[in-house]
Image (cartoon, rainbow, N blue to C red; front, side, top):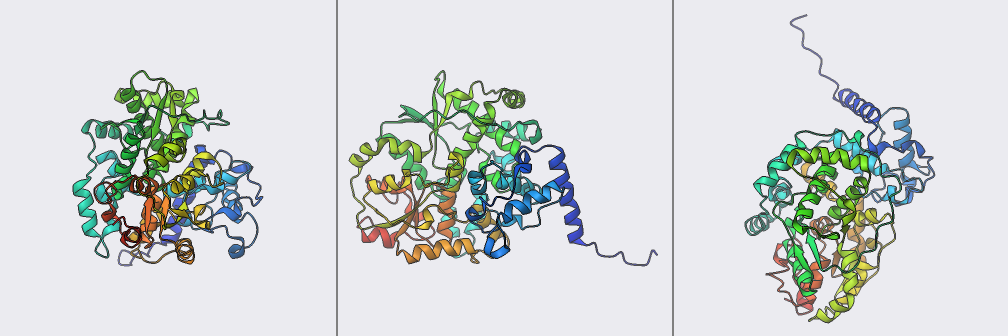
Length: 482
């Protein structure tokens, strides 16, 4: 017996056994994202809205394929028998579900346990957020490394040592997601009014497009809106959460800690508007404020924050001022600030999934189109304005599998739509969407960059067009901006 070789373990069997254990644990702990999965009755409402088509009825047959596969498996205590990596975490399914079943949230809960990205969690512990080198894998091919170096040198995004220490002390004592209660039916949000000053969030993904951040500050200044920042602000946890590197509770604690930082920066103000260039950040803060509105949830969070001398006293004082909600309040002022009309520029607009998730509707909001038209650019309507870009998670997955140029069906569809409409560039509200378009060789700008160009900003010093991987020179040269 001692001389006989042991049989090779069945990797699939081991993986399945681990996954079954994951499902049992999540169900036993009453993970909040699982709280209403039994309400799914396979009505099929989410079927047409899955951009990754993992529930496409023509491919798999039958209405409600995705929901039925996910919820039926959970009801039987098993893992859903679908490729969870295909989910792009847009939450369209949750947005349209008449019973608010979060299929996307359920998949995220399982995915982050199965495909935990320890490197992203280490970055949170070591740096308090995603540092520049987190994006290095996306720059290693086709002469892009020089662009990475230039950004890393000019925009290193350092984090305050005290902030990093606080994040580390929070995350090294994890809280189970099951201790939090779902928000139920939150009160309607107060309508956003024109603020005198705002807290401007520093986004991790802004490293890739520093011009979007610089353009945002130029616009706020031109509109007479004072903006505050703080070196103690860290990552909201949104990007690491959707990438499988931060859990539900981790994200909530990180965002709550930042709310305490913002509260200290504003002093005794009873109304604080939080803005930034990233809808994933906006969604993180909106979701956290909904949960923190519950006294029991706030007590759990404040007990954890107490270890680092912080507290969220009144979540009602904060308002999330996403740029697609904030800037439309100033359309007349923006029109007067335009120095160079971008006439002749044919653009498509793309509204991010996480902005729509935050607002709970798949309807295309008018904000992005209205802001684009202020510049004089011609908006060409297409399906891309309401479709998912393909997702940053999918982009990282392709690079990790060494197939960066192998576009999945969703990316191919989006690129084909761009070509068919003979567009010059895409305009987006999200630096993550911008990254995905840029990598599929589609010229793209953030809405803040487009507005800044029309307002006379230097294309190189402020908008940083040289940092884009797909050149903007042909389009901008044709209208005389370069």
